[in-house]
Length: 269
Image (cartoon, rainbow, N blue to C red; front, side):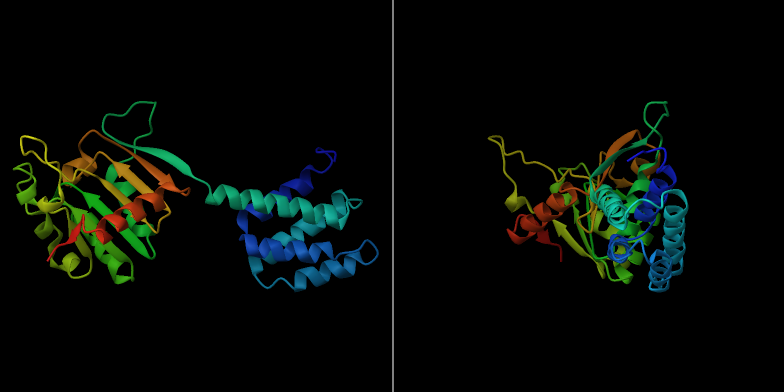
C-alpha cells in the first residue's frame, strides 16, 4: 500500500478507531466488509443509515467519502481490516499500563509539577465501584473528605486502612479515625493493623502501618510518600507515581483484601 496515496484514508481510519468505542467500530467493520464494488454507492447509504449515533454517523460518512474519493480501488476487505487493526491498537493503548510521576515541591524542568492532592482527588473522583485509601497519618484534609463522602454517596465501596495513635509509638498525635469524621465513618469501612498482628524484634519493637496509597476500581493506583495531611498534600516535598491500567492496581487492591480476610487488618469499631 502506498502510504502517501492512502494518507487521507488512513487518517480517517485512525480518527474513527481513536474516538469511537471498540464495539461500535467492530460493527462498522462488519458492515464495510459487505460493501461490494458493484453497488458501493447504495451500500454506502445503507451503512450510514444503519448507524444510529450522530457522532459515529459523521465519522463513518467521512471515512466512506474519503475512501470513494481518494482510493476507490482499495477493496472493502482491505479497508475493514485496516479499521479493525487500528481499533485493536487503540483498545490496547487505552487498556495498557501508563505511569506518571506526581511531584509536590520546588519546581524543575525535569519533573512536571503536579500537587499530590490533585492526583489523590483524581483517583477518588474516578472510582465507580471500589476505592481503597491507605495512610499513616490523617490531619486537616477537608477537600479529600468531601470527595470521599461524594464517592460513598454515589455507591462506591470505600475502604480505608490507617494507623492508630495507640499503635504508632507516639508518632501520631491526632486520632486518625476521628479525623475522618462521622460522615465518612458511617459510609466507609475503616481498618487498622492491631498490635497483636505485628511482628516484633528481640527488643520488642514493632513496625508501623506506613503505606500511603489509593486504588480505584483495580485500574488506577496512586503510590506516594505523602500522608493524608494538609501539608503533605500541598506544601511538603513529596514524590509519587500514578499508575493506570496493567496488573499493579489490581494486585495492590487484592493484597489488602487478603490482609483483611486473613485478619491481619481488622475492622475498626
